[in-house]
Image 1: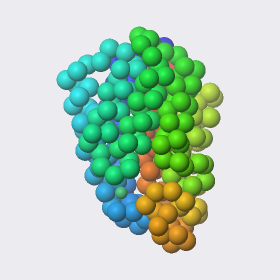
Image 2: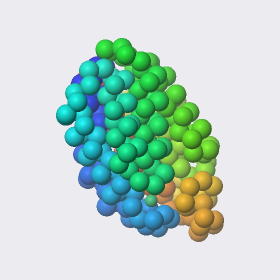
Image 3: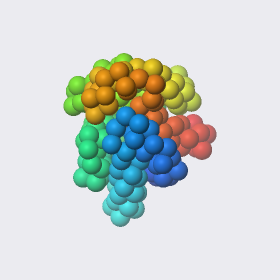
Length: 202
Ligand SMILES: [Mg+2]
């Protein structure tokens, strides 16, 4: 079972990963966006880590809801509301249980991803974070490692696509040949989840 501490470690692992990969995320965003994805997410996840230390929420749902709120208030552009919605919706779906199982998490994440699709209006194949998140959620039933691999594959598979949503879509065909920064950071978030689970022996 996964408790509040597990979810807190997922978020701090994600923050460390975003710190490590910030330059790469910004480089990807400079090719087809406005070159701020790495620094934006870095600021957001640092705020998440600080808030979790200060408030110490005691359920998985409360951890993700707090994290989502921080991302909405600190990350600029479209990414803040989208990532914030992902975590808040997932947190809301987990309710106030003190511990949740893998199946419950998969179901809650699906609700979170649905929320992101509704807010952003993106579908699979539009070259957005959805292209990493949807395969990850579908694979999560087969385990955390499967979800990580599916998210990474989904992110890589955005490279030949033409963007149909977000700032990159303004580039039209010129968006082809670049991996989507949002799908890339989404894959980092899922990899952080798998790393946390593996560190626990889940
Ligand atoms: Mg940007």
